[in-house]
Amino acid sequence: MKQYLSLVREILETGTQKSDRTGTGTLSTFGLQRRYDLREGFPLLTTKKVFFRGILHELLWFLKGDTNIKYLVDRNVHIWDEWPYETYKASGEFGGESLNEFIEKIKESDDFAAKWGDLGPVYGKQWVRWRGYNGEEINQIQNVLDQIKRDPDSRRHIVSGWNVAEIQELIHAKRSAPPLCHTMFQFYVSEGMIDMQLYQRSADVGLGVPFNIASYSALLMMVAQECGLIPRYFVHTLGDGHIYLNHVDKLKEQLMREPRALPTLEIARKPFWEHTFDDFVLKDYDPAPAISLPIAV
Image 1: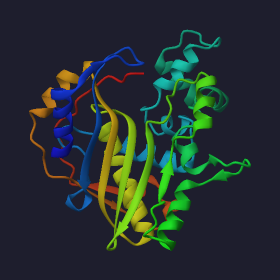
Image 2: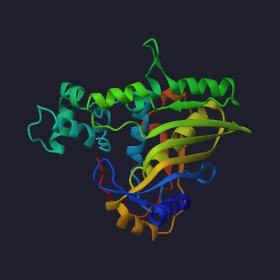
Image 3: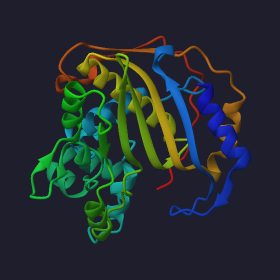
Image 4: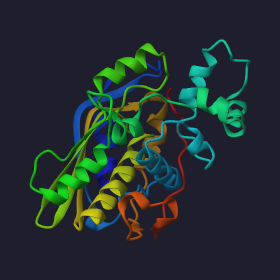
């Protein structure tokens, strides 16, 4: 994963210090791109341990069209907890509960989870339940699968997360989850192989990008299998690629580590929509120790 380390190094060396909505401050560079060849192994960071179980549960949650954190919380995945908690804290019903107490309420009460655990129209909603012009739900993922099989050379194999109308709905509803960072992704078929490019408008390089690389690479593998193709390149294009100032020292520590051999990911051969968590097996993952980074909300 030298590509990732070079990304970190480039931002540390050339980034501009900027303010941000969280008040944390960042080093930021605009317009970055890295390419990961899945034929060389599964691109999961080895210079620190990455929470792949959480990445996989999150991806399957997206594909379910779910936007409520209860699915994740019930599986002990807490990567989205802070956003609904901030919304709850700003409400008239907040009773001083800690984040852990809030999560326990999500676990214990379906009614509480339905009211306070939903993030609004985020990834799962846009991917598989996009609101059409006459109110019908559009499954963009299924549309792309069908298009790839029918017309692999099309230049329209695109899934968009940037739903302008629902971004406004998210803002006016005062939900704390930000408009989707993963703006759109596109597939490209050539010589029996398939590539994917993700455009990410905003990229937390220290904490989020390692998750993003692995998540979209796993999705590319799933699509490739469904369409009878070989997964090749995951191309990651970043708009505002940034490192939070409170991540700088830890990332410098990570840059001192040598990358290790990449693991492999095996996916059971079954129809795309039937995959469950147990259908994915990560093999030969031998990373350096984890590095803890605080999340900016």
